[in-house]
Image (cartoon, rainbow, N blue to C red; front, side):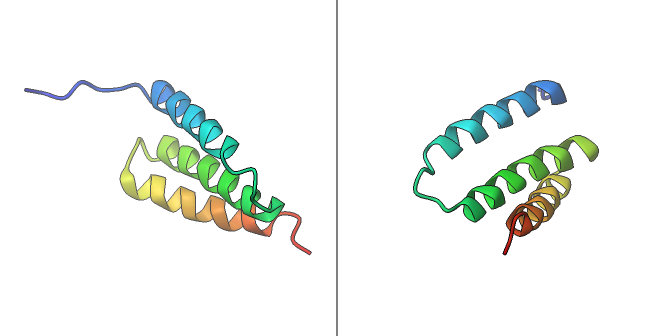
Length: 75
């Protein structure tokens, strides 16, 4: 039985919704930790979209986004 293709827009919307729910549970995090988590989430979405949903693109995007988020406003 062939798998049904899920549009990237639907996948991105679902990931954003899960990210928002996940971040609401992180009230005890420092600003730098929040920036890292947000960067990883945005990077994962971007990597997924740019590579057509590949696992390597999603993980790579999350890693790059996490590093960038970690460095934002670093003192």
